[in-house]
Length: 386
Image (tube, rainbow, N blue to C red):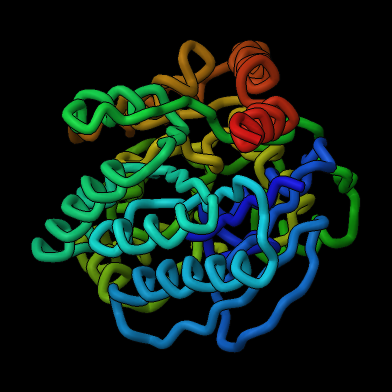
């Protein structure tokens, strides 16, 4: 049996977040019975449960600000080591999502190696560039990234842009890397248009099929909510903007409200969160277009899900997004007025023009980002040294 421990996501079942979605799909699509997944889950208590044949172990994490994620990863890693002492395993893998525990990686790696284990990491995006962090924290993330790369047996990058960055930036460590993207499902929602759950949600939000633009993602500055909202307000569209996010009445929300005045625009709707997978698919399918503003991550699952479900996709023009969308999407820049013009242009597309982009997008997902293909690629990597 090949034991694979995954730490760094908030856990499964998935809510919002790229890593959570990835772990959800990876465990769901497991094909090789030789692999046993162990998934760390952030919680307010210690417990264990089985989900999608994965052993999920909960880690109780105190509220200690930005250090919470570091504490969580270290505690989860120590749990893996304790488990392996009690349940010896041949060539176990500890797969760490994100580079948050670099200063402790040497110590943890030595203990793991004594147990015959291997350390794999996924560097995610450029955590040290995220606007929510102050300068000292950003310096820590960059320092931590370097130490994680130095200690890793393998770096799994979810975008080719990130793999190039790893090889170029840390070439003195001669990092061993591989590229495996995220995977998604392109199957249509099982909910019918007349399904009560869907009908109630659309009625509650005041949305009509095909009459809204959609944004889905974490409510953080680097996802460019301010730019997208400002530009939508400048546009001439009569359609609405449905924003599905974990919005909270925090400083960022207050800043957006004060600087954009979006409360005065009845087209803009903050719709809260949607955790029901089939309903979320239906919402994507019925959107006129999806707007994606993620800037500092690698391949983003919410983008893949949009390409698999939404006919027209308007993406921020950065390397990560271009790599995924290629010719199956339209692109905008943060230059004032650029996205507003693209929205107005998109408003005039015929159904046939939208469907051309929609078919290209679905084919792109099927060819390069199917969940089965990605799960198989991961299983091959985990079994390399078995």
